[in-house]
Length: 113
Image 1 (cartoon, rainbow, N blue to C red):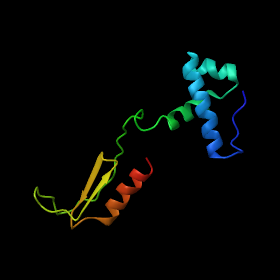
Image 2 (spheres, rainbow, N blue to C red; image 1 turned 30 degrees about the vertical axis):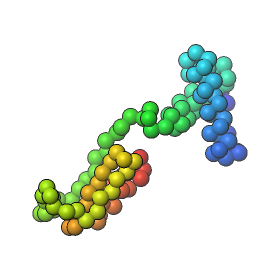
Image 3 (cartoon, helix red, strand yellow; image 1 turned 45 degrees about the horizontal axis):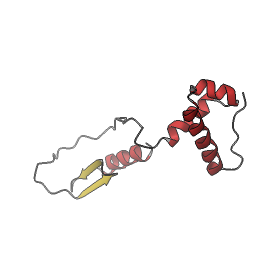
Image 4 (tube, rainbow, N blue to C red; image 1 turned 180 degrees about the vertical axis):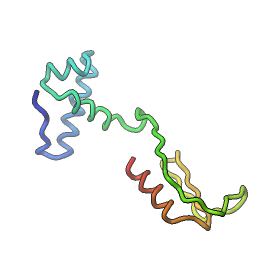
């Protein structure tokens, strides 16, 4: 079975796989059968299908973030120094006394999602 080569860049690969994904969905064939008939890699088609499906079809995954223990605790009504809102779904409030190292690790995890 041949694999698709990305010689023309990401945009060309994206269009190529979008076309196959739409055709497979319309065909009524399973992914495996569609790939056999079109000499495509099943795993590559599955990868692109997940990649192009957008956030509405993705499952939420919780990622543990190790945190440092501090002696200060947030009290309700206490003003926070910073509030970060991501995609109108995730809010992070950072008090005036916070660990820059922990915030950096949280942001790193969120960037790599």
